[in-house]
Length: 148
Ligand code: HEC
Image 1: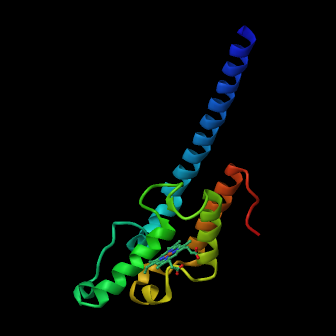
Image 2 (image 1 turned 90 degrees about the vertical axis):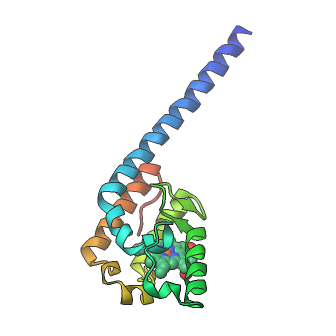
Image 3 (image 1 turned 135 degrees about the vertical axis):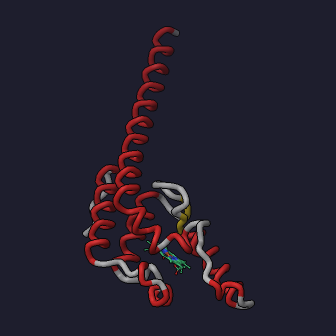
């Protein structure tokens, strides 16, 4: 009986230890995100991927409103930046990180029509590099393979 209690105690401690170190990694990733990446996402992504949308005047035009609302809803099902890292939306943290970089690298996000109307959403190469550095850092902290 004694032995069993000891084993259970040990296992509990181990689980706690892993949870704590996981939480520490997440908070390091979140801190890096907050200082380097969030300001960029705020200007290029937040209108669709958070509930802090700054609606333009033409949002009040019937038809445009429905189209935009639907688009924003879809965007947030995929990924929502309202919370800091780990964010919410589809897939594991690893999948989210890789998808974020893929969309930016391929020039798919922010969408073309949005970049046309929002100059501040056109990320420069140094800004993209900052995002890539953060994604690499996060993947490393979480123990995943780096981006190619
Ligand atoms: C004008 C609205 C809009 C903006 C701004 C926007 N997105 Fe999106 N995003 C969408 C929509 C809609 C979808 C879901 C449909 C799709 O994949 O095209 C999406 C999907 C995504 C996905 C998932 C893609 C997939 O195939 O799984 C990622 C990752 C993403 N966006 C990242 C970003 C990032 C990073 C930014 C800023 C640099 C950004 N988005 C800016 C509308 C937007």
